[in-house]
Amino acid sequence: MDLKTASIRTVSTSLTATAALALVAAPAHAQDYVVQPGDTVSAIAQGHGASVSTIVATNRLDARATIFVGQHLTLPTGSATQAAASAPKTYVVAKGDTLWAIANNFHTSVAAVQLANGMADSTLIRIGEILSIPGGAGASAAATATTSSAAPSSTAASTYVVQSGDTLWSIAQKFGTSVASVAQLNGVANPSLIRVNQPLTIPAGATAPVVSTTASISASQTLSSTHIVVKGDTLSSIASRFGTSVSAIASANALANPSIIRTGQSLTIPGGTPTGLVGATFLGRTYPAEVVAAANVNKATLNAMDVPSRVQMQQLVIDTANAMGVDTALAQAIAYQESGFNMRAVSPANAIGCMQVIPTSGEWASGLVGRDLNLLIAQDNVIAGVAILKQLQRKGTPVETAIAGYYQGERSVRERGLNPDTKNYVASVAALTKRFK
Image (cartoon, one colour):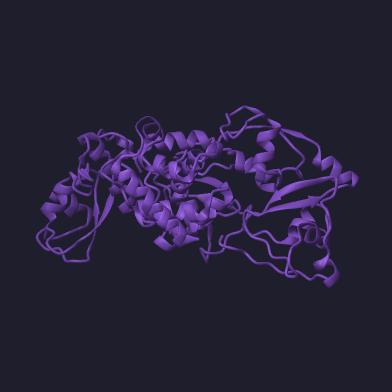
């Protein structure tokens, strides 16, 4: 990117025909609720002191009470308890908070919080800032746990409380560890089964991967990568590519004879500065050596990490766009055009991951969502791209201009108009958007 730089969930509950078909006007006292992953109408009703039939009738749901992630529901209120719950509250922004997470915890909407605090269309919040929270149902149990998706480094084992939407894979990625390590430490027999609010012990020394922005590699960025031997590889050529030595690789892999490696063999590559993983030129432009060097470091880091499949990345794009109020077809089109949903993609411009966001644009996106985003983590990478796409469409900006801004840069488009390659990019994304509708 040149800045370069949900799944639908259908739920059923028992309803009478009368309730299912009733058409009721929205009550005088009502609140807006955005459907979250895992929600059911019955659970929403129970949590807000309302009846299933009233929610169905008020929102004109079908006889199966079908709802989907990101859908806005009008929830009737009126009892003394509900009136108290709907009174404005205050909340002090903590490290790791986002406006979306706060709104979700208080069962209200981002738009409502923005309106209550005079934030216009901004989602930028600051640690210690006091927010007025309009009538929600009070913070959920998850509100007491951290909402940060980039965990701090630690030399001792730490505890993480599972949030809605978490998977063991995403938690392992947040802390720079492996699914197997977290599962083994917590006695999780089936890594696919974890529950919201479940406390998990995170292995000692786990730390999020570091995004490289320059050719200078600090001690914290010393890499231990994995390389799969391909036809024509020699230990010497591999060592040269990764900026290490033949003896270091041989020692790390207990190779008795460094001359013998086989195609398909997995080798651990000890710390060094990788080269040759990312080229220096893209679309006729050659990038500065320090930018390409940083791109090589990020590529080596991603190669050594477990990342979601392309299908999983596509679903993550859909879910994130839904949650952030961005056209899912457009978000998918951008992701496909940029990387083909490949989380390991890194360009010579050091555009990283599925959404191809460069570090400076990642910093911009971090400001938009109110927390630090790590572009090497799949979830954060998609959040960054979608947040930027949403910002580019603010105040009714035409979608074609927003697409151009994602590729060429908003300021460049405004001052210089569309470059020839940008026009081709916009046309391609527009066509892809129709494909993903």
